[in-house]
Image (cartoon, rainbow, N blue to C red; front, side, top):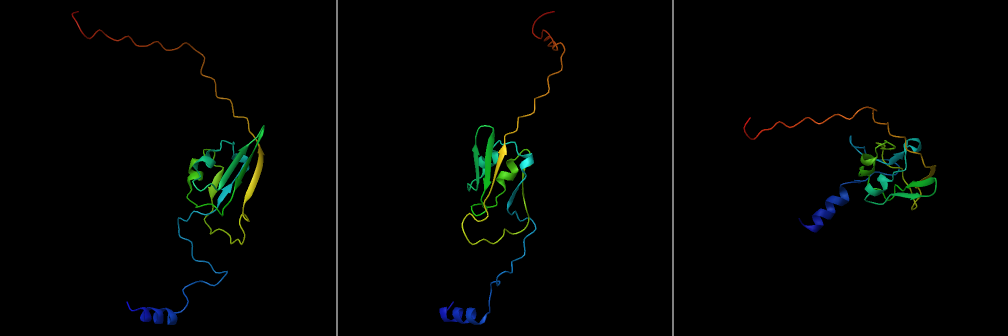
Length: 140
């Protein structure tokens, strides 16, 4: 294509961007900002290990831990949400808010470490006896 024809078409074609604060439509399966529910978190830090963009930071201390999330670093892949067994993480379906400076949206929580629930004891009783193996080779 001729460069002058392309420039002419772009010049008279009109604006192709949205003016602020208008936003594009969000697709049906869009994964947005990670939401954290502190009451469900056990402090396992699996979300930190699954986060490929290092948007989630986890620092453990004696009796407490600090969980923080920076949406400015997040790629919204959803791996952290998939790896959370207690469902303390979820993702909203709206576009992330507009921010003007680095770490403006960063959120941090300091929580007391929860004591894991004791496992139920095995049923008390005699152990089952193994079945004897029948003699399969030889004369009877």
